[in-house]
Amino acid sequence: VEVEEHEVGSVLARELDLEPLASEQVSVLARAAADLGEEDLTRVVERAEGNALLTLETARALARGRGELAPSLRGSARATLAPLPASARRLVEIAAVAARPLDALELRQLRLEAPDDVAAQALETGLLVSDHGRIGFVHSLLRDAVYADIAEPRRRSLHREWAQSLQASERAGASSRAAEVARHLRLSGDDMD
Image 1 (cartoon, helix red, strand yellow):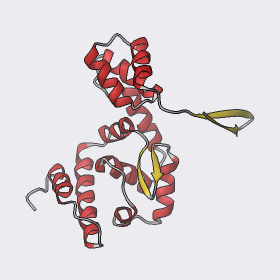
Image 2 (tube, helix red, strand yellow):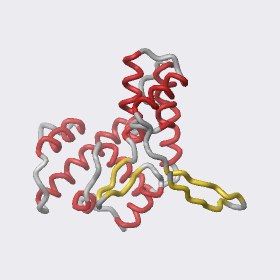
Image 3 (spheres, one colour):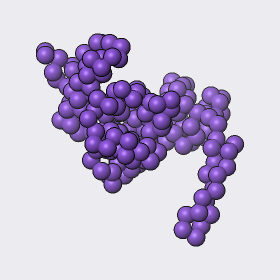
C-alpha cells in the first residue's frame, strides 16, 4: 500500500494506492452489499476488476435490477466532465467511443488544439490514465458510464470522427485497423461509404 499525503485547504488528506482485491474478496464484498445469485455475482467479479468501490456500486445496481452500470457512476462521470473545456471533454468521449487506449499517433490525428494541454486536462479528471504513451480509461465501468451518457446524435458523430482518425493514422504509418474502422463507421451510420 502506497500512502501520499496532500493538504486540501487546512485539512491533511491521505491518498492510499491499493492493490486490486482478489476475486474471492470481491465475491465476499459483493455478497455483503447485495443479495445476488451466482450469475450476478460472477458479473460483479468480472466487471469490478478488483476495485472495491466498483464492486459495491455494481452489486447494488444489479440487486436493484438496474443492470451492471450503477446510476451513481454515470452521475459521477457526468459531474467530472461538466466543467471541462469542450476539447478535453471531446477527448474523453472519443476514448469512450474507441473502447481501448489511444496511442500517440492516433491522438495526433484528432486535430486537437494544444493537444498536450488537452490531454493533461483529460488526464486530470482521474477517468483516464497514461501508460506507455497511450491514454485510456482507468476502469472499463467508468468508460461505460461516459459512453452511456453521450447523447445518440453526438455518439454517432464521435464514432465517425474516430473512424476517420484511424484511417488517417493508417495513412501516417500505423497498422491497418480495417475491422475497427468498419465497426465505427457502422455505429456512426456511415457504413455505406
